[in-house]
Length: 435
Ligand SMILES: Cc1cc2nc3c(=O)[nH]c(=O)nc-3n(C[C@H](O)[C@H](O)[C@H](O)COP(=O)(O)OP(=O)(O)OC[C@H]3O[C@@H](n4cnc5c(N)ncnc54)[C@H](O)[C@@H]3O)c2cc1C
Image 1: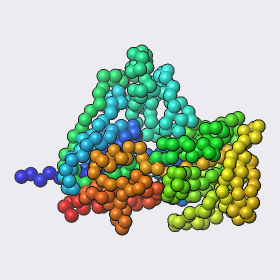
Image 2: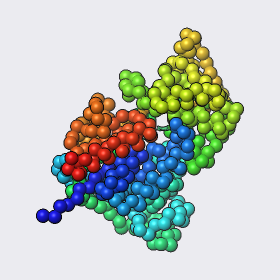
Image 3: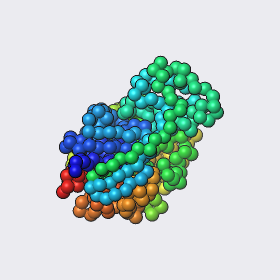
Image 4: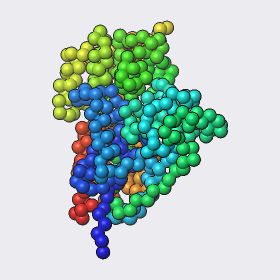
C-alpha cells in the first residue's frame, strides 16, 4: 500500500503559529494553517515597536508573513476556523469552515480603488476602534494575504440590497457577491498545534477599566490603543494626541496590573506589562524629549535577559519615574486632565498627580472561543481557561499529538512565543515521523 505522508495543522497565525509552521515546513512537512482573521500576524502586527530591542514590530514580522504565505509546504486558510477534529495522534482529520470574503482571491491585487468608493464607514477593529474603515477593507495595511474582504454585516448590498459600487469600480472584476462559505476537509494530519493567542480584558468585560475612568474620560486609553496611537500607520499617524483636544500630553501616567493579579478578574500576572509599559514610555519620549512618564506599579517584574537594565535605562535616559503605589481613583479637571489619587507605598502618603494622558496596562485573557475549540480538540483548559499544559513540557497539551505554543496557554512575550513555536514544531514533527 502507498504510504501517505502526514501533515501538520497549525491553528492560529500569530507569531507563535507562524514560527511553528515555518519550522515544520522547512523540515519538509506540509502544514495547513488556519487563521480566523482575514490576515495572519496576530497581535504583533498591532504593535508599534517591540521590547527588548525596540525595533519596529512590523519590520520584523513582515518577512515572516510573506515567507509563511509563499512557502511551498504551507497552505494558508485565512478567514477560516476549525469546526471538527476526528481521529488520534498520527492520524487526525479536520473540517475547516472557510468564510466567504466575496472577493476572487486570485484576482484581487489590493489596489484600494474599491475602498475609496465604498460609502459605508464602520469601526476598525484592528485599530481598536480609534478610527473607521470601510465595509470593504484590507484588515491592516501590510496584511498577508493582501486581499480585500467584504464585511457582510455592514455592506449595504447584504444589509439593504443597495450599492454594489465596489463591483463597478473593480477593474479586475474581483468582487463576487455570490461567493459562499466553504467546508474543507483535511485528512492525514499527523499532529496539531494550537496557537490562538490571547484577548485583553476590555474585549470581554469593561467593568474593571471603568474604575479607572476608561470610556468616561477621553484621556484614558488602554496600552494596545496607545500602541496604535504611537504607530506611524495608526489612527494618529504616529503623533501622540489627546482625544479631548488633539494636544500632545506633557505628562503620561501608566497604570499597571489593570485586572491582573486580582480576585475580580485574572488572578495571575500578565507577565509582559512591566516591560511593554517601559517600552511605550521610551518610544513616547522619542516623540517628545520634554515628556515626563510615571509608571504606577505594585512591583516590577522584569524577569528576562537584559530586562532589569532595560528598566534602568528607562529611568536614566527616558525620564521615566517608577512609583510604587496603589491607585485609588482617577478624576479630571476642567481641561480634562486626568488626576490620579494614589497611595505612595514607599512614603506611606496619599498623593495627587495631574497628567495629560493615562495608559492602562490591561489583563491578558484567553482568546475568544477557546472553550469551543478545546471541546472540538478534546483538550483540557486550566482554571483560568488557558490551555492546560504539562508542567515540565509546556508545549504539550492533555492530548497526545496535540501541542501548543504562545499566549494561548499563558501570557508571554514575543521571544518566548517564538521559542515555543519552534518547540511545538519539534514535538509535532516527532509524531508525524512516527516517533
Ligand atoms: C499592549 C501590548 C504590547 C506588547 N508589546 C510587546 C513587546 O514590545 N515585545 C514583546 O515581546 N511582546 C509584546 N507584547 C506581547 C505580544 O503581543 C505577544 O507575546 C504575542 O503576540 C503572542 O503571540 P501569539 O502568536 O501567541 O498570539 P497572537 O498574537 O494573539 O496571535 C494569535 C492568532 O491566532 C488567531 N486566532 C485566534 N483564535 C483563533 C481560532 N479559533 N482559529 C484560528 N485562529 C485563531 C488570532 O486571530 C491571531 O492571529 C505586547 C502585548 C500587548 C498587549
